[in-house]
Image (tube, rainbow, N blue to C red):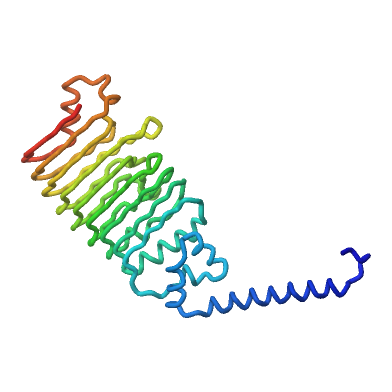
Amino acid sequence: MDSGGFVTARDRQDESECSKRQKCSQGEEDRISNLPDFIIGHILTFLCFKDAIRTSVLSQRMLLHLNASNINEFHLLLEEKYDPYIIGQLISLVSNKKIKVISLLSHNECSISCYPIFKCQSLEKLELAMGHSIIQFPSFVCLSSLTALYLVAIRSPMKITCYSSNQSKELTLKFPVLRDYISCDCIWLDVKRVTIDAPLLEKVIIERQWDYSSNVSHAEIEIRASYVTNYLYRSYVSSETTLLDAAHVAEASISLSDDSKVNMSGQELKIFVRKLFNINNLKGLILQV
């Protein structure tokens, strides 16, 4: 109530209660910040990621300074826009914890630094499923434990490019024990050549469903694999060249969309199909055109 500028007893009471709440809030912050790391980690297991992000307002240690020596799996689903700095710090944190599985999914545009992931030698499975996003790859990546790599676009093509410092625009990806490689609606943007060296690769799936008219890729992609048992290529005929360099392929399936065949002769189709293979022994081929 307005008292003509005078401080009433009620005003003093309200001020006192406000002061108590502030002290209580500060006390809670201090108590959370002073908890041991293993207790903070236990608390986070009961929170969804959205609530866990909010805890960083109270204590940065809850997200950025956990002292767990190992984290086996990390799954992150971003349905809203979050501070990319916090997300980047979180990815950097788990990448240094002998992580085995990383799965990043985003329905919206995001600019996340994935560089720490490409240095993680304990990583066995990597899934990047994002929409409206650009992922930057270093010029050279070698992940000695990776067995599965899934690059999947959500709602719109996912663009993969190299760092601006890479003037050659060439990427070399070495995966000595990779078994599964799936690429769905991914565009290698402003990249001249991609070499995927995976001698133990068994399954290769490359699919493109989105319209790439505004994001044309001219990359030459070479997949070096000794024994691929299953190869699936379902796409438009594009200016991007995919070459599978394998000694043997047990089964291969090529499916070209109707739109990509409108102005192509039979001979041109044969030439395009030959570009997809450099194989000494092909046991079975299913061609849908």
